[in-house]
Amino acid sequence: MAIEKNSVVSMFYELKDANTNEVLESNLYGQPISFILGKGQVLESLEEEIYKLESPCNADVIIKKENALGEYDESAVQTLPREQFAGIELKLGMELFGESDEGETVRVIVKDIKDDSVTVDYNHAYAGRDLLFSLNILESRAASEDEILTGIVAGSHSCGCGSHAGHSHGGCGCGGHSHGGCGCH
Image 1 (cartoon, rainbow, N blue to C red):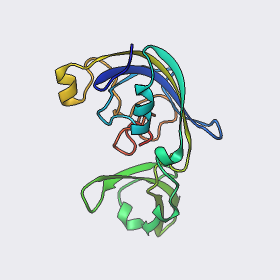
Image 2: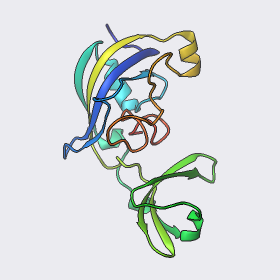
Image 3: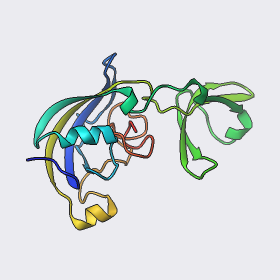
Image 4: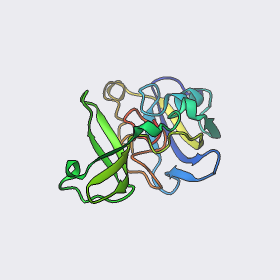
């Protein structure tokens, strides 16, 4: 069956760095994720590739960094005064969420901790990487009117919750718009 816009897609996936084969995320030993195609719940370039597939199927899809999360930007690493993190038990590699001057949610990764400063990285954890998605699409079906309206798939583990098995850096590996929800967007 062809997969079309506003289809609910249920799948297992494993996300790897396409150059090193490092597993970045996986739900192979958990529950399948479900999302509505065309709602921006996964990386747009991954959606474009899923539209080309039939359901059910297994497929490997490579998304080049320029179509995934772009190049790694050294200027997105900043050292801030430690007092800006008062009350937070900091650990190397931990993710922190805050609000930008424009009111958008911002995610940073703690790169270094000193007595008077903290170095944080605003780059997505997968920036600068070509991504390899190994997909096992179990099924696709037309989304209900409620699912299309809310963007929430009825009765399933939906993309964007951020609780997938594996090495998730903020969500599932398929790349939702939350810059960390669904892993690569």
